[in-house]
Image (cartoon, rainbow, N blue to C red; front, side, top):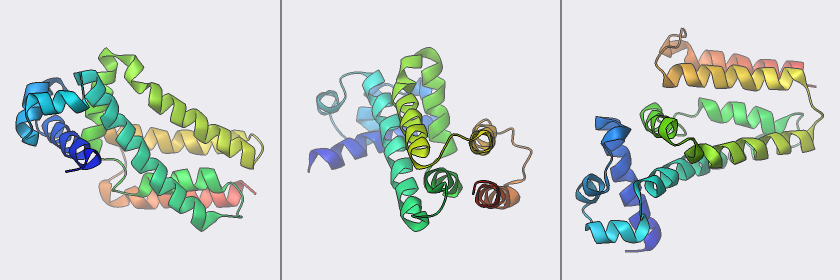
Length: 181
């Protein structure tokens, strides 16, 4: 078995524990049992629980980046394609599993440095948007609206009924297209 698939199997096991029992219940012993690997095998890939949580976040960022880049290719040559691709990626149900994301955020409350890769990803995205277009309060407002919707969903406090979620994100997309020319 290759190292990449072993890491993914371990991360999958950690995410199952986080989803089913909460991030506070993630221990290296439980992840080893859940993944079917020995604790030594687990420690070879992730020396600490923090390293495991960091890898969970990095995988989430990588998935988000891949989906966003796919949308960027579709929008290539159009105004604000990076921002609009980011908004489109938010609509993709495979990008963010709210239970996994919440587990990472809960852990980050105890160790804020765990979110450093996310901060870097956000800054890189902002830089790419600015390289493509000039700075725009409207662009940041649309981004903030998408983030607000996302966090409301993660916290399970969204006023938007789940059957209308995609309509709201589509409206954000339309606003981006219409307002950012």
